[in-house]
Length: 63
Image 1 (tube, rainbow, N blue to C red):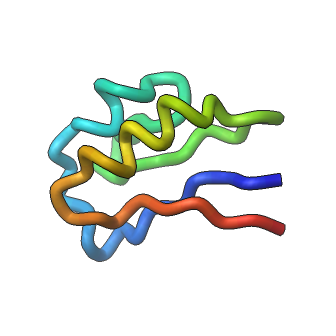
Image 2 (spheres, one colour; image 1 turned 45 degrees about the horizontal axis):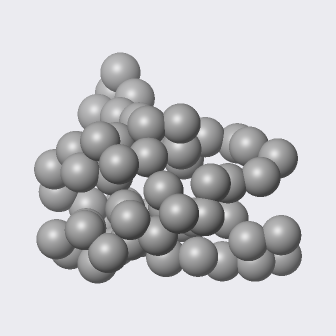
C-alpha cells in the first residue's frame, strides 16, 4: 500500500497540505505536521499536496 510521508526537517508548516488534503495532514498541538493513519489515502488529494508543497517535502512511500 502506498502512503504519504513528510520530511519534517524540510517542512515549513505553510498549511497547504492541510488545505488540499485535510483528512490526511494536520498540524499537531505541538506544532508538527502529522499524517493520519488511514486504511487508504485519497490519491488525488495527496498528489495535490505533493504538487503544491513549496518545499517538496511530501512524497509517496510503500511497504
